[in-house]
Amino acid sequence: MSDYAPGDYQNASFVEALAGFTKETGIEVTPIYSGANEIYTAYETSVLAKKSPDVLFVNLYDKSTTWTSTGATLPVTQYIKDWGLDKVVSQAAVSDWTDAKGQVQAFPYFGFSWPMWYNKALFEKAGIPSLPATTDDLIADAPKLKAIGVTPIAISGSDSLGQKFFLQIIQTLMSEDEAKKVFAGGGYCSSPSAMKGIDEFLRLSKAGVFSENAQGLIGDNVVADFYQSKAAMLPDGSWQFSATPKELVPSVELGGMPVPAGSRYTKPVMYQAYTSSAIWLTPSGTKRLSDVEKFVKYMYESNVASSVVAGAGNVPVQPIDGLETSLASQPLLLQALTDTPARVDYAVFPDLYVPGAKTQALVSAIATAYAPGATSSDVCAALDGAYK
Image (cartoon, rainbow, N blue to C red; front, top):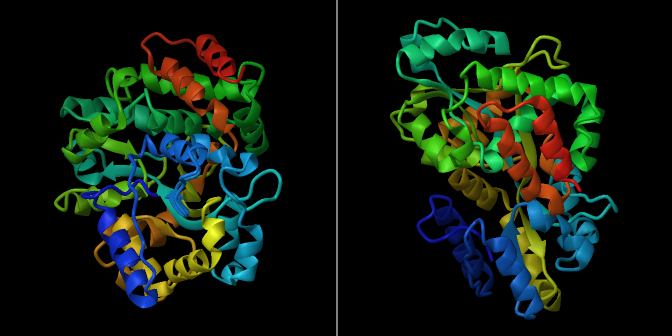
């Protein structure tokens, strides 16, 4: 089961890999597709009905963060060692997929890069000679961009895109440990540094840096604005690289979100983690473990992994021979892996700490920060309420 639906730009290389596995081993693979927002419920339903797929290909987010602890999926800690994959998969990827009990929840397959996308051509058109490095720079640039009819930052406030962006900004004025603690258990109102971060977010909002009516927008709206050169900046992930209009690609520079004065970060910040997708072992899969082992090992073969990575536009969890050649058709992903790291610092990725059961409540609470006239006390109260 996967959320790579027929017609999805990420699907072609994935289906090609499945066909290659069947050709090599004679083992038939039946793909079961479910929408990105429905796959979590669809999988849980299949488990309850005792009709689960043998393997599952999905990311670590929301409901899936509880599956291994509840027995809906099986930990793969020992299989990674027994099948020799600990010599293939980076330790950073294994760490991101290890839960509080020390169990590796699935076989890490993709990571992601989540940079700030800059349309350099729009900055040049607005007479801005260099990209902003600080939030003060960004606020100073905003009127010039608006003067040519361009939104400074395209952002949606009612979904996970807006949630991640908000948490990325507020943690620029928090220590790493404080960010992890607050993301995990709340306490925004009682954290002076979290309150400073919320104030900084609201300062940017009041300066008109974000999309108008952001609270009512979703990711598709703001991605379209950036693709159509109606917005100069967009915080979004590597999964969008393959879909970017070819004529826009030469103007895109990937970097980080500008940081405020007093931040612990010295460079603009972005997210990068290895939780984009993994191969999960299900209760049904244990009944044909030999076939599953062959499938998993096949998917990690360098030529197979490079093809799937290039097609999906995500970050590999293993060294891939000839990476630049494999990604020749993915210039943005190649930029993200080779040039961007020197320009950025990496923020704490919230999904590794926010409890899965609180994720959607927190998304809804953060939407209040995008509302006109929002105050820091209202916002922190909504955030803390999401954890109760």
